[in-house]
Image 1: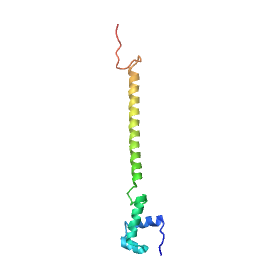
Image 2: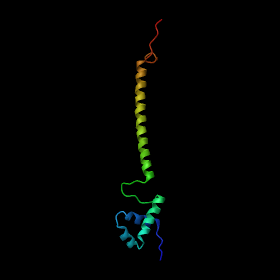
Image 3: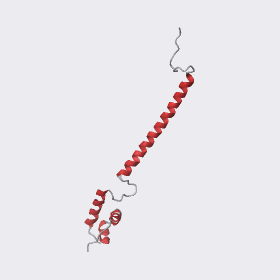
Length: 108
C-alpha cells in the first residue's frame, strides 16, 4: 500500500536525517532510504528544507544583511546631520555681520 506523506511529515523526516542514521530512519518510516533523499531534494528545490540551528534561509540572511546596512547608513546620516548643525552654528556665530566667516570686508 502506498501511503501519501504530507509536506510537514516530509519536513520532519528530512530534519531527522541530520541526527539519525538514514537506514534506520527509513526502516522506521517503512520507506526506502532513496525516498528520504528524494524528499530532501524536493524540499531543497521548493525552499522548504528545514535548516539546522544556526543556519538561515537565504532570504532571511539577505534581509538581515540589508537591515544591518540600513542601520549603518542611519548612523552615518545622524552623524553627518549633527556635524552639519555644528558647522552651521559656528558659521552663524563667527559671522556677526551676516557675511561668510571666511570673507574679509573691503576697505575703501
